[in-house]
Figure 1 (cartoon, rainbow, N blue to C red):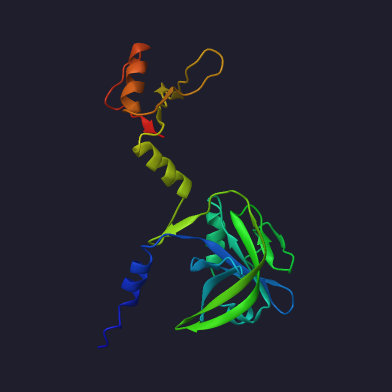
Figure 2: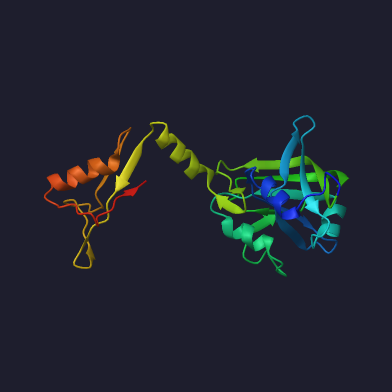
Length: 230
């Protein structure tokens, strides 16, 4: 057996350890109909000239159309667009019906509310095993400021949530909220603007502090009472 022959599943799992963004690659077919598919094999290549690349499987349904297109677009999905990724990862006949999109300057489908988009002219198509690398020269782009959707080890994640958790672990603001139930009904607190009791702090254990505050208010905190870290 050759040294470079591996179990494909094990190799895929190893590649999946590298977190990536989630994108949808789009173009138009010869009849000007939109085509597209989800992909996470995307990277920037050069600022001068402005180049990027995406890897496309030769078995992809729209492989021929995509690699023959004069222009294509990269839609970097935002954290709230997991459903869009799932839609474009499935073999559906019309993936665009459930997506809000418009034509870019060169006619490529551009999605609404993405983290960023790039429209490109085809710069090169490079053979690479069972994939090809489509190198695009950026002709138009826009960044919304939204955080991109992440993907690693076969699952989605939200980078902003991970950043918030890291900030808390490093001594940033952390908080806890208590949802109280009494006789089957929620029990909010406050005189005018009712809300669940909560506490935030720059450090320490907010759940213990919140429990102490509840006890000072005359509420007994039992073992069954749980506090939700935020």
